[in-house]
Length: 89
Image 1 (tube, rainbow, N blue to C red):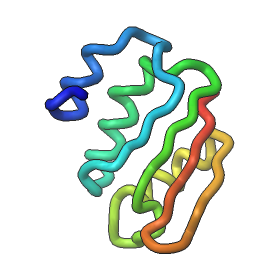
Image 2 (cartoon, rainbow, N blue to C red):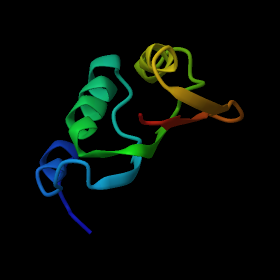
Image 3 (tube, rainbow, N blue to C red):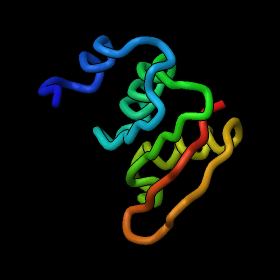
């Protein structure tokens, strides 16, 4: 367990060493984009990335998720606040 923010925690992982990542932090567009871009170099090809709150239309998570759907293979659970699952390639 690393008790630190998401950005600082990324410094403790080697490139392509992460095969499962769950992003559930601040809900602003720039925040979630920053989290993904910070961890992207750490992702192993074929990694699974989950995003929470993709169904909340007034959160920036939704906007960023729509952009990711154009580039990656994704699956969505729309109930409650939503959960997006992305395969990183």
